[in-house]
Image (cartoon, rainbow, N blue to C red; front, side, top):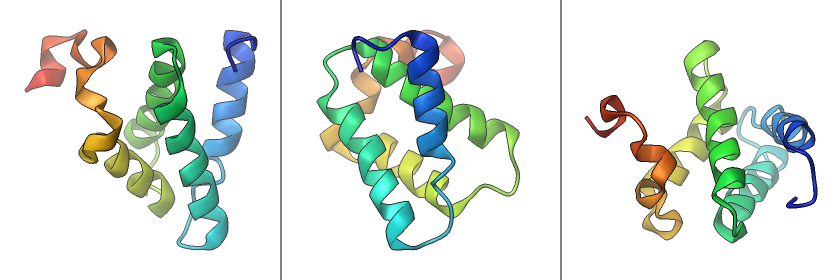
Length: 97
């Protein structure tokens, strides 16, 4: 992923996010892929891009697909991912409220 262009990663992450749908093994697999990529990435840019993809879909689309909600909630609430320690989560004061 580090060698991929920003646009290439964006398209890849969007393709993965398209698979986050209703409760089934397929959705679980792609949710785990997203969380694995976030956890094992050594670049904040990749983690920020994953967060952006998920957040854009939560803000724009209604109703939210079940898999998208579960993945985002897992990312922000599970202490394993240390989501709130990243600089991009504190870039605007509105986020910290």
